[in-house]
Length: 276
Image 1: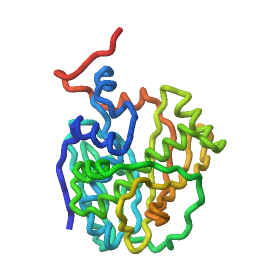
Image 2 (image 1 turned 90 degrees about the vertical axis):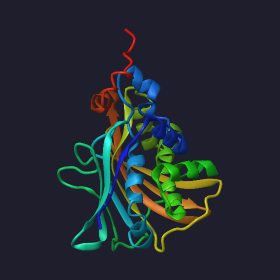
Image 3 (image 1 turned 120 degrees about the horizontal axis):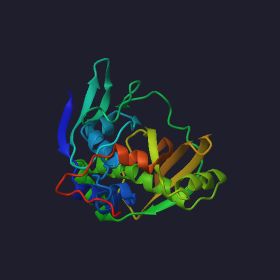
Image 4 (image 1 turned 180 degrees about the vertical axis):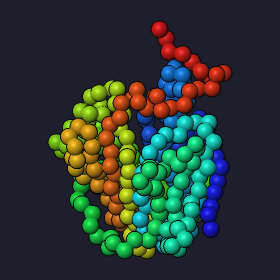
């Protein structure tokens, strides 16, 4: 059965989500975006987490793969329809959609989905250890914001969303040559922001149930696809030595001017023009 929820992502919710997941990108900062006359951008993992949560039962009992395409942006104040749409040919697959004027989780060739795959969960790549501390209130805030009723699903989706912070830490504090190269693309160029084009997440069986501790361990390995343009990040997530998931991200840098052109204009009564 199709599950659907109509939502509006507010400034305060986005700020809370970024605080919970330690996302410091200024594109989610109302003060910064207000000076540009723009509404803040909804973090991709916020919209995705709320969408996946609609089919929490399938995630916990059957699905072991989530594939996502980030094709366009959502802005604060947008009316968005989040939905999971069953595949009539496969009872263990649902399409994931976040629809404004179009499905932001789909391209003309593909779409986001959650399903039960056949591939064995044993092909992850070793990577550099990045540990992120966490506090109980982070998960409590995250659970409330995505509307989760199942604590196990909320814990899992938090570890999934928190991966973005670990990936950025690997760039902010690079150790490998490729990490240093990405650091040069992102951090040494103030006019470029990181952008995830797609991701693929694999979940072990049975579904990983855990009690959040004081830290999450991420093992990250970056590969170069196209120098200074496109990279693949392999991530293994563990808590207390237990593997929670393995994921792959296709990512690169996108000019801030391009993002600002895609962002919606601020509401007239809130718009603040940049200083001349």
